[in-house]
Length: 330
Image (cartoon, rainbow, N blue to C red; front, side, top):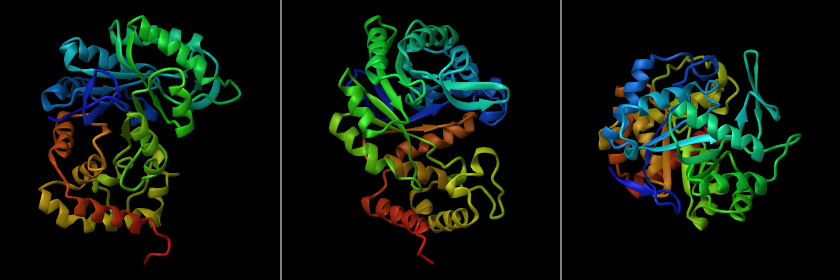
């Protein structure tokens, strides 16, 4: 499988990575999963050419990290590039983030907090070092921390050998440039799908300029781009307030996917694989997180790495997505 260089680091990653947002279970993360199947999925990833595994302590209060750590016990560590994150906490104060049940999550990127978080993550993962340490959400008032302080902590961890590379998620171009004033930034994460192309105008230019890997999350729009939802589908949970789950938009998205049939036949693939392949066709600085929970799901999703869309087909798919998002189009 083709691998790309992660920023300016010495690491090479598969263009599709395994995201473990839901593997940790919990009501806010899609409910509990079959732990045994999740472990098998993580362990199967390197066999399928997927060497990148992404987790975070904020995924069900450390549960995802614990499951990833358990899986790693039976894996060759040098075959995996592991991302975990900092900045979302529940055992210390910060700026308000989400509330899950009775537990409040906070944003905190202070040096003191990061130094505590790294040791907790290493313990849950059963490791002595992490390949990529990523700020999960950027600092905001009322408990704002300057990026200079955050980077001071991350650079110290790098010097200590606890982390190899630094990343940042949910970040603006201006914040990226601020990070770069104080050290290296090798990867950024942002929401990106054929239906949500905002990062093309915001993150793409700065990533290309500074040789930073762009990693797409939610590439299938919370399941909509799997093409499996019925026409009368009723959104649930976090889907309810999302743009593409409003009745008129969802209908247009489904019309678009119906029109993809010739492309699916041409490339011998399913709708979701076409959607993933379209993202990969936008540049070799792009990586995708897929949230497979089972081995069959992962086996299906990795097929996108073998599809090479022609420029004309990629442009045609983009035009269809733009039409689906056009209020004046009928």
